[in-house]
Amino acid sequence: MTTSHICPREAGAGISQSATRMVAALPVAVHARPRVPAACLGGGGWRGVFAGRFGRRRQPQGPEATLRAAELCSVLRAVIEVLDADGEAHWREWMAKGLGKVEAGDLRGGARHVLGAYGGMGSFNDLVIGQRMEEGVFTWAEGYQTQNDRLDGLRADAYDLAQALEELPIE
Image (cartoon, rainbow, N blue to C red; front, top):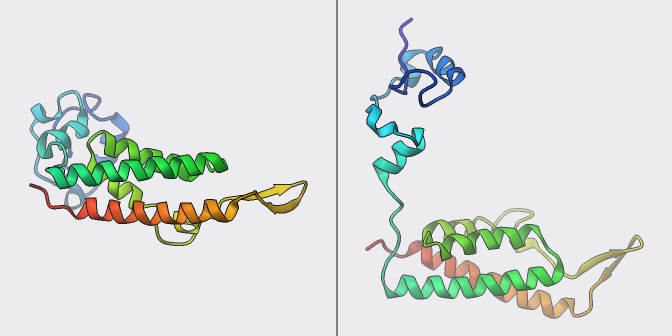
């Protein structure tokens, strides 16, 4: 059986020897692809190939994108504040990651990350804050209805803004 390697470099010079052996063990039809010039593999391995070939993801530009991104950042900061006040760590970190991406200029990546929190069982849509267990007894925190109403409004705003940002055309 004839085999070929995906990586044009020798084993150990860009990918591990074990990865090279695994690829070499596959039939040609499974992994035969156009060879990537060794110059493309400089330093970054396959990550360098993709970054060099495709470059950074293109982002929406212009005043509308800037406005939507600023609005989304503002709403996400408010969501994070509400979640911090309740001690909700998981969704706080999720929203903080989305905020960080948008602030770093990855508008589509940040919007997609935020949208990934919605839909399905156990999603951000299902979160109810203000619930406590004290000495084995379920209780509600003071003002839980107001906080949940605020969170619901922010949750809807974040979804709408992220959806609008993701749908903006790339100029």
